[in-house]
Length: 309
Length: 89
Image (cartoon, rainbow over all chains, first blue to last red):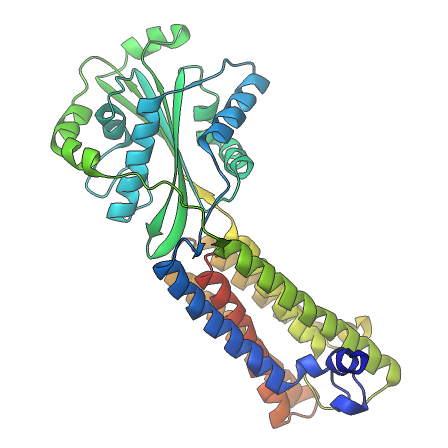
């Protein structure tokens, strides 16, 4: 057994002074493995989502707790969970999946406020934060708090209620976990009243990555859209997360980490031993390959990060 | 390792620069999946060609070395493909 491991990782006479795992045949085996496993995972995720699927450990209660924690830290009162706002958030998530978009406004012009009114929440103030691709509630909240527009929504004194939806579905063909946070208030917040009365009928304030609206009595846009789309909104079903037996993201991450660690270890060990023993051989530079592996790891880190709008 | 880096400083600095640019562009074009894929493939292709060219100029280039760079490049692509199919990226 010891010989086997030595053959795999130490450059010696049995492997022509090149660590066994770096031989062409083994490299080719890993390439075939990763491509085949990728196709297999895609097949299983599509056909057996209860066995292998995407799952984020995010619950509405966790999101509420963390949102209120941030508000308390900033001297603001707690928000209360509102079922209508949660229903609006679930409908918004379902709408994004069914129409395949990732934005505050749907391609057919439906705004977030239509979902809020459609769910029976008669708001004075309302706001929406969106996130996708996160695995934990603290990651979502921290991403929102790091973005000025979302932070403004999270820490607004205008809001009294909040609703959340965490839904799984396909966006642009990708399995995605969406988090929708809808804020609202049915009464005017005292310090804002004077300012709001001076504004025109609909004051839509979109601040870069999140959107906030302050409504007066004669809102037109929301009413028109709501009437024509109400049936669609009601028909849209929310897609609650199904916890699969195996989380595909965790499985890929663990496999990649293990195999890349093995290769990096083999490259370093091979390089050190060959340099010490002054072995002359005609192979590529291990340092080059380590550079490429580092790039692959960095790409995974950059691309695996969730996004907020 | 440091000696090797020093000896081929220009080669490694240019490789790092292209990798950095590839990473930056991949981040900047997000979430355009097609553009991201093209940038990643071009960056890896550069790595393969640059490695082969470097050996041709500074060392002895053999078919075995060429195959090694191609296989390592393909391994990088296959890992990213696996991560994508697994929903990680």
